[in-house]
Image (cartoon, rainbow, N blue to C red):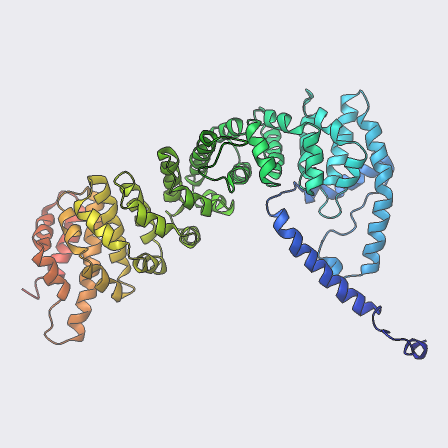
Length: 511
């Protein structure tokens, strides 16, 4: 056999290993092409229920609809022939199952309709080979759309769940659902008293919004904004809130801040985006995990761009959300915002009196991050403007600006060269001046910053014989030491203690 095979040209083209390798490469390429399309879509899969679902389907319809492979990637390294046989066997059984489901869903008994819809939903929830095309070909979509309007304790949920998985498919499959009038019904379900029904409607509409700009605009003109945004004022689980934020991000993706009136006019754009920012702010403000979920929704780059909006409401909302995102201990969230060019926009906002306080607040949150974040702020040459505002801005602006400068000073403990920079741009004067007028929390923070600068200066004393602390002299020249000496008798114990430590550590030996 081998001798005969060797007589043919291209004899290795169809050997098992070559075929497997070629199929593997083709599969990877297809997955790369499909990945961008499916990033904006989600399918509601319930793996834990799959085994029970298969048994139930076999009991009800007399057909074994076993899942061909629980691991989508296993076929690349496993037995391809077994997988192909399983897939072919499944495809042969699906038409028969669909006929049975269509017959059951045409029944006039609600409980029987519900069981059939649940069985269909479970088939569509398969992790691999969901029979979306077969369900559409069997004419089940119109029935599912109708079931979403039925007064029943379970049927609308099952129908909406099935619709969610159908619109997670191809563009043609999504438009097949839209063509059957599902959009207004799904939008109506956003006001349902059942959170699970609401969540399925959110997922389905999010899939539609992620399909195309035209379909996204169609959802807006159908009135999705008001009921979706109203959901943020209700109590929802973290997962449901994440789904709401994801759908909002799909609705707001690539909407120009100013554009000619088309599917929705400028006022609707601004209103939607403003409400979306405040809604996401409510989620992000709940803690680091929800804030990270907002970042994962992919809204950050768009959000940074919204800070340049001519609409004051929209600009304030976007700055408010950015301030929440970059605060806290999640360095990754701050880094994502920095990567999206937030510093360039903040630099421009510092030139406008109406946005100076908000911009300084965001900068104070950024400089409270890692030393790399502080260096990125230094490199964009934005801190000289902050120094000016710390000395001459409105009271609120001065407070946020001093916090930003103090955070940079605290970073100098890990990188002494930072101290050299902040002193060179004149940061010491506004920090010392603000000690006399700031609230207790800001005063304490400013004292810690000055202590950090002086500690770095002390290194010069240790490394050079008889050399004075250069930063002590600068602080004395601007009257900072006199203010700190007075703070030793401050009624706040923490402030008085810090002031005493600074005076005893950095003046006694040098006076």
